[in-house]
Image (cartoon, rainbow, N blue to C red; front, top):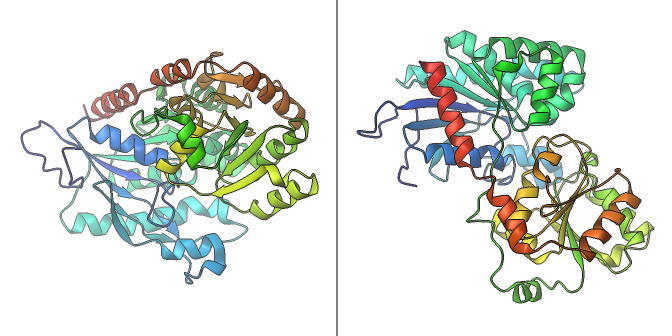
Length: 407
C-alpha cells in the first residue's frame, strides 16, 4: 500500500498537508470477527491509498467478562484484543458497557464516555487529529457528535442502513440523530434512498452527500476455470448462494422456502448468527434439507470462490442500505436476484446485473430465481456492470469533503 503507519502523528514525509482522521465505529472488523463491518475497513483502506490522509481507528466492543465460546456472541466480544494492526492500520478496541432493555437509549452516552477516556489518553501522550470520521449513525454518530463538542473537532457521520431506515423510527433515537446531524460538519449516506429518508426526517438536503460503496475488483474476479472451481467446492447442478448474517431481516428463511418451488436447485448459505438452528429446522420441516448447505462465516477470499462457482446470488433482505454482497457477486460474473428495497435498485439497475423480486415472498423469490437461471446474462457483462462501482469516486468524494471542512 506504500504507507504502513497510519496514526495520529501523520508523519508521511513530503506529501503536503496531511488530514488526520479519528475513525470511530463499533462496526469494524477484528481478529475474532474479521467480516464484521468489513465495508467500513475497505472504504478506509482505499481512502488512505489516495495519500495525504492518516487514520487512527477506534472500534469499541461491548464489555463482557467471560471469553468462553459457550457464551456465543458475548464470549466473542471478550476475546477481541485491546489493540491490533489490521492491513497496516492501527485499531484500538476499548470496552464499553451495554445495559439490557434500556440499551438503545443509553448506548450513545455510554459509548461517548468510553471514547472520551480513550481520546484524552491519546491527547495526553501528544497525539492529535483533525476530523472525527464516524460510521453508523446510532449510537456511533450520536456519540461522535458529543466527542466533537467535547474536543472542539469537526465530525463527519456516515449513515449505512438500519441506523436510518429502522432505528430512526424510534422517537428518542430519532431526536438524537437529528441533533447530531445538525451539529455534524458533514453527513454521508451510502445510497440515495438513505439520503431521501434523512431529508424526510428533517435534515437539509444540501448537507447530505451520497458516496456509494465500491467493490474490490482484484479480490472479487471471474474464475479462470469455473468448472474446476465448482469441482473443488463439490458443487454440481444449479446452485444459488445466500450471503449474510443469520438474522430475520436477511430473509434466509424465505430463500429456503422458495426451494419447494425449485426442485432442481440447491442452496448454499454463507454466514453465522442467532437463527442458525431455526433455519436448519425449517429446511428439515419442509423436506429440503438435502439441498441446503450451511457454510458458516467465510473469509472474503473464500466467499469470492463461492460467488464465482454459484449460478446466482439471492438477497432477500427486508432492509439494506447498500448491500456489498451484490457487487461482490457481480464482480465474480454471477448475477443476482434481490428484494427491491432501499439502495438495492441503485445496484441492480440493469438486466445485466440481475432481477429484483416483484414481492418479498417464497413464491416471488422462486419465480425470480427460475427466470434468472433460465435466461442468465453473460458473465462478462455482469462483471462489467460491477466495474462501474469502483472506490475511486468514493475516495475522491471523501477527500473533497474533508478538505472543504478543514478549509
